[in-house]
Image 1: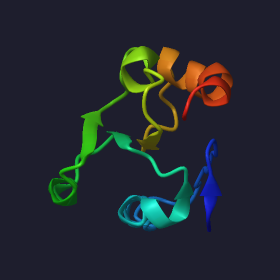
Image 2: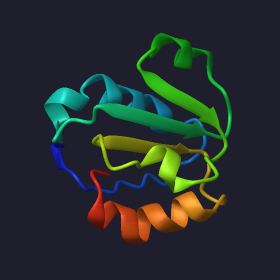
Image 3: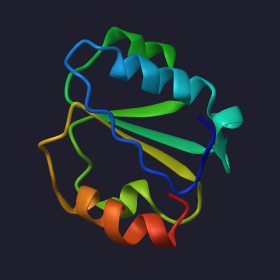
Image 4: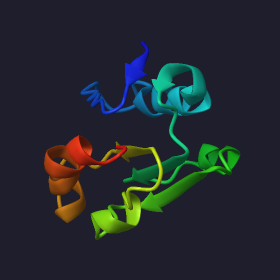
Length: 106
């Protein structure tokens, strides 16, 4: 898979099916797989995993950021990952998948 910004990929596989590992492999290979490559990666998760410590260039956050302005300030190509947060929603989610992804480097 080679993705061009802005793109959206949703994985609806069962629990413990390797979704998080797939996303972490995408992050490792982002320079080759995403055009333009993200200069910032923001990973919001529902459950902490010790493997997160292996990714020092990724901003990990439990739950969702309250404001989309913090994640998407318009200055950098940003990859936003929402892991195990399918039933969470707030301004960040609403704006990201409606307005921001069309108008910013998201």
